[in-house]
Length: 488
Image 1 (tube, one colour):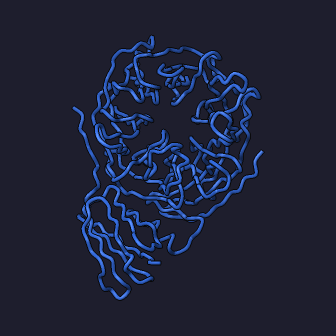
Image 2 (cartoon, rainbow, N blue to C red; image 1 turned 135 degrees about the vertical axis):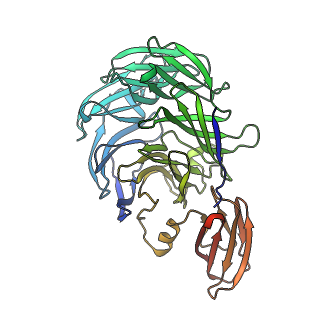
Image 3 (cartoon, one colour; image 1 turned 90 degrees about the vertical axis):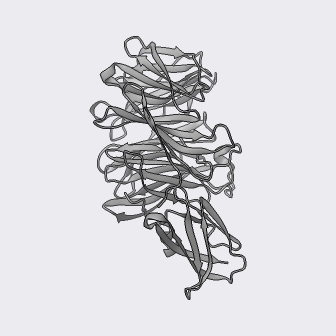
C-alpha cells in the first residue's frame, strides 16, 4: 500500500553578452551567469559529461517553432564557456527547441528536439549525435511528414535504443524505439486518453515499459509489454498529479516520477510533488510539498544523483497567459531532498523579475546547476527572455553577479523576505515551514513588532522611521533566522 507524505510547511549569428561571478563553497565551485541575445532565449536540458564540464542546449529566436539552436560546453569550475557550436539541422526546418540531451555510445551526445517544416508547418523530431568536443557526427529528421509529432521524454534503453515518448496529433500518445542514428525500429500509438505521454521508464528485469499520460481524466499510466508494445496493465496515479519526468534510483527496485499536484476540487493550487513506484508498477509513496501559493513545475527540474535530489519550480505563478511572459516577480524555489523525501533545505533564489527554472542538474561535486528563463518586463524588446544560470553548492550557496553584503545576506536565508528595502509592507514567505514567530527590532534592541504566523506574514512597517531594522524568525526544533530590513 502506498504511503502519502504531504510535506506541509515544515515544523521546525548572435551577439552574446556573458556575465559571470565565481567562488568556492563547501568544496563546490559556484557562479551566476546570464546569456543575453536580442532574441528569446531558453535552455531546456543539460548533461554533465565529465568532472569539469556540462553541455547545455540553447534555443533562441522570436518564438517556439522559429528558433535556432546552439550547444555550449561550460566549465563547472570557472563558469566559462569553453566551446560552442551552431546546431544547423536542415535549412527547410526551424526548431521548436532542443529538449533532451543524453550520453550514448562512446561518450557521444545524442540531442533530440522538435522542429517545424517552414513550408508545411508540419512538426517532426530532430535527432543528432555530437562528440564531447561538440563536433557533429550525424543528424536526421524523423517522423511522419503528414502528422505532427513531438517527443517529450527520451531515454536510452537497455538495448541501446532511443525510447521516445510524446504525442502524434492531439490526444494520440506516441511511443517509439529508434536506433541512435534515428532509424525506426518500432512505433505505436495509444488512443485511450490523455493529451500526451510525458515520461517513460524501462523496467528491464520485468521486460516492461511504464508510460505516463498527462492531463488525463483517468489519471493513469500504462505498463507496456516490451515484446509487442501492447498495454499489459492500466494503473492510476493520484488525482491531480501531473507527471513530468521519471528518474531512476541506483541499486533500487523503485523509481521516481516528479511533477506537480493540483488541488482538486478547490481553488487553483499547484505544489511540487512526486510519486515513488516499484518495478511492478505499484505506487509505494506519494510526496507533496505544500506552500501558500502556486508553484509551477517544468519538465526537467527534478534531478537525482546518488543520494541527493534537487527539486524546483517557479514561485509564485499567477495563471494569466502568456504564462512565461507575465510581469510578475517570481523566484526560483529549490529544495534539496534526501531519498526519503525529507527536505535538507529550501531556498528562494533571485526574484527581482520573472524567473522560470526549466532545468535543474545535480552535479557530481554535490551541488547543482539551475537553468532558468529570465523575463524582465521592463526590457524594451517585447517578449524577450534571457538564459540565467546558477551553479550552487550543496548548501544552496552561490556567488552572485553583484556581491554586496545585502545580497550575500539574503542568499543564506530559507525564509523569503520581500520587498527589502520597503516603504509600507514586508512579506515573509515560509515555504515548507510554518508556525513561526517573527520579531522586528530597532538597532538598540527594542522590539517594535512580534507575532506568530502559520504559513506567511505581511507586516505593515509604514509607521516606522526610515532606517535599518533587525528581524528574527524562530520556530520549533531550533529553527532560527535573522536578517535586516531597510525601511525607506
